[in-house]
Image (tube, rainbow, N blue to C red; front, side):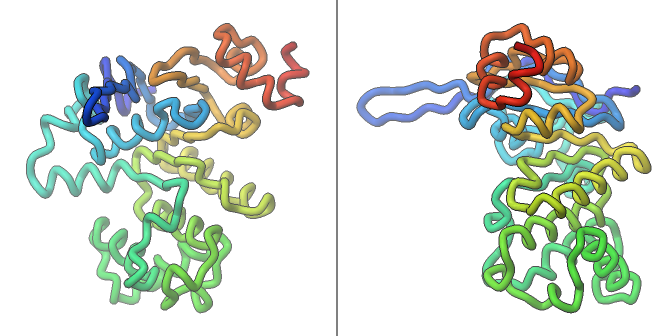
Length: 266
């Protein structure tokens, strides 16, 4: 498989404190390779650096040092024009853990779907735009007539999460970073959404990074698992290697919090 994205010695340092300077390495010298069409789970407890790493890849947070290359282009050095950024946003997309933070409460939810259409060159007010939006909502199990025209506060967290996933379905990016994308969904809906991600991977070659603390989910869906601890990737490999034959002590501690998985390898 061809390399889609690569990070080289990626580091993010935060400094806090007024009287006493406190330095925190949220991401510490991380080098990873993502290939086209693979599903990779990035696992670790809260504060391990997973989301910070994703935000740097998404160009939401500038690295302190290191480089990110997407399809051979340096994400933080080679993208300079509006067309460059539109190219990147079309190909690299995200579904965040907290859907409420992704919507402006003063606008109807239609807005995020219209923005997705404009990014791929479809007029939101055209019959084609209406068809694509309705299809995308139905794909995630939402009824367009009961969803469109609503404000974020009129819908549940699970519904908003599915709208964000439908936006990703419209854009069909080359790389999708999904930060706990099914955490707010019920079990039946969760399975359907995971199937959609698999369709994106199989039919379009989309690379998907699941950011999660759910080792069971990571084991079930991933081609590879990366374990992150204190800003570093401390273990990586196939699900069987990482989950059933863990080497790092942190991975073993994570597995102890999941009794069924712990029983398999202990």
